[in-house]
Image (cartoon, rainbow, N blue to C red; front, side):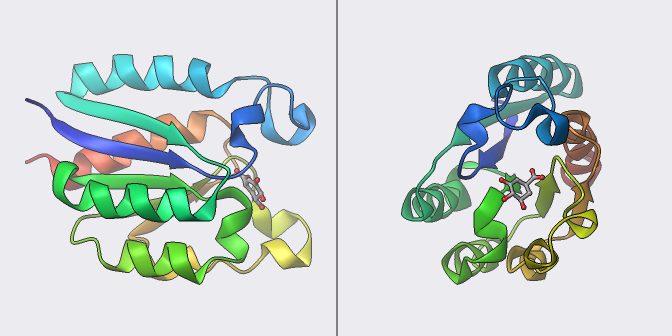
Length: 146
Ligand code: DHK
């Protein structure tokens, strides 16, 4: 069984493709997942993609990943800027966490400049749109494969 990477997406990312496409692009989460699956197979890894609009669901999925996954790539979306609960769940993980954003929050509203989750992240990828997901997978592969 290939080692599994969890790609976790927070609030409103189920609306990718129709949500403010000038900021978040035209790809849907399903489009992104399709590309990730192909690349993961080539890398000898497995990718599981999840999305929730609910903070507690994200916390539960992070907790479960502690025993089933070797890494998490997380785009917490708005919870990036508000959630101590997501941070605390990530801090319990003994494997690499990569924080991911489609946009570059630092070029946007001031309230998007602070991330609670960065404290738990090995690294951060932002501003590359949907391609950032593939960049995160490449980065994660370097961290978890020998
Ligand atoms: C997505 C969101 O939904 C926003 O709340 C964040 C992030 C940025 C993104 O760029 O992927 O501020």
